[in-house]
Image 1: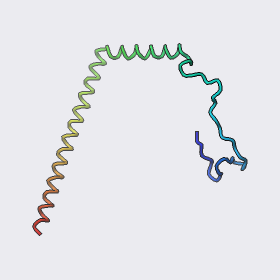
Image 2: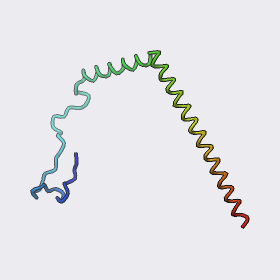
Image 3: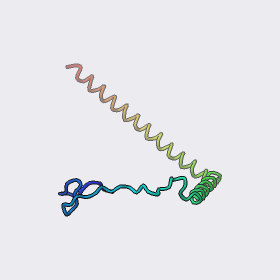
Image 4: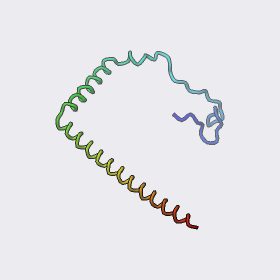
Length: 104
């Protein structure tokens, strides 16, 4: 929710120039999180746990995760090597320009 007044109105004043009361979050009868829908939370946790267990134990999922990981790691290694080459080229250029200006 946006707590800032609209453009042209001061803080605490509405469109008609009348003072507004700040809105407060309802705190009455707010049950703690643990007491709200415990059966629903249990069932959702049970379903999520069963889905994770199925995915972890499935051979096809394991193979696809492993192949994706290998591709990602290979890509990262290639990018790191490219970055190293660029840094070496930059270092060589800096050395060249340093030596070029030393002779003057």
